[in-house]
Amino acid sequence: MQYLHYLLNLGEHDVVQVDLKEHAYVRLLNDENYHTYRDGKDYRYYGGLAEMSPANIKPPYKGAWHLCIDLGGKEGELWASVHIIKEVVPDAKRSRKGK
Image 1 (cartoon, helix red, strand yellow):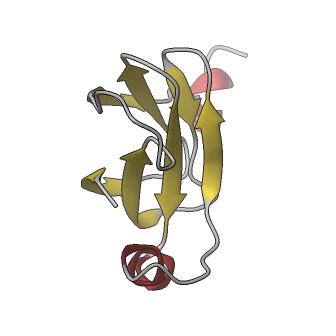
Image 2 (tube, rainbow, N blue to C red):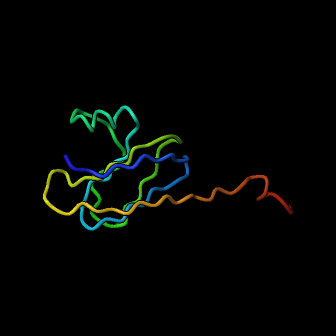
């Protein structure tokens, strides 16, 4: 299977933005599930078929993640641009300042 692969170190508030040329499967996998995906075995993932671009996906927890993008076996041109968007989380101490 042809797929694009990105190894990402993501925080729990990060958002992965994927720009696509056409519909594609966008999957976020931990290390164990990436190896079973790569080997063609059963695996678990976050994400799914992206029918609109950009597709945004947020990791369920902080850590190393494999982002895999594929066409699900159909013909077409596999192209993607990946960006990490750092979500701004207000600092509770700063938000109380001045009160």
